[in-house]
Image 1 (cartoon, one colour):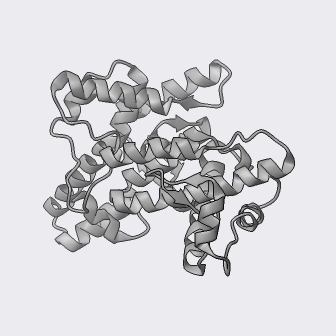
Image 2: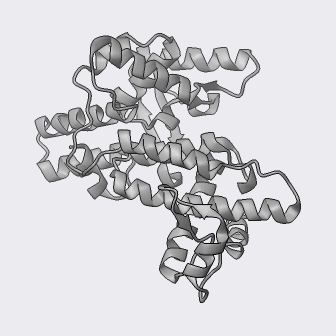
Length: 305
C-alpha cells in the first residue's frame, strides 16, 4: 500500500466497515474465530469500536514507521506487532487493556487479509494466529493490576549473568536510564552527542535526551562504531534473542522473569527515591520520574511506583 498513514488506515477501514449491518449475520458467515475459537464477525459494527480500531491501526503504522522504517502496512510482520505489544507491556498497561489492543489488531489483520485477497496476492503481514500467541505471552508478562510491582530484586546480578555483552549494554541502558527496550537496542552514530549525551525518539515521537556515565557511553559508542565498520547502519540487538538471554539469566539466579520492562520498574523506583532525597516533594518527584520515563500522561507512572 502506498500513501500516508491516514490514507492506508482508511483503506483498511473500507474492508472492515460493517456499521448498519447485522453483527450476528456477519459472524455466521465470516469464517473467522476469536481468541477462544468462537465465531466472530469480520467487520466492525459500531462507531465507538471503529474509533478504537482506527486509533490502534494508526498507532501501529506509526510505530512500524518510526522503529522499523516500514511505511507500508502490508509489510508489517509478526515481529513488529510483537514489539508493539511489548512496548505496551513496558509502559505498565494491564493485561486487560493490552488484550483490548490485541483485539483491535486482529480486526486490522482481517482488513489487510481482505486487501491482499482483493489484489490476488499471498497474505504476508502479521497473522491472527500469531496474535493468539502474543495474547498468551501478554497474559504472562503484563501486570494484572496497576499496583503490581514488576521490579527485579537483584537487577545487577541478572545483568552480570547475561551471556552476550551487547545484551548487558541494553539492560544497563534500561536499568540506569529508563529506556524502553526498543529504544535501548538500536543506535546510530547520529544519536551519540557530545558530553556523553544520547538522543532517541521516545513514545509518540517525543525527542528524549540522556546523559550517560563515561564508561557506559564509551561502551555504547564502541558498539556503534563496530557495527558501522561492519557495514551496518548502527548498533542493533535482536529483541527475541535478548529476551531469551534475559530469561535464562533470571533462571540462573532464581529470579522471577519480568521481561525487559522489569528494569524500567527498577529505574523508576530508584529515580523516585533520588528525587525525594534531593528535597522534592513526592508529587514533584513523580512528575519528574514521569518525564524521565518519557510518559505523556503522568498517571501511567503510578504503575511503576
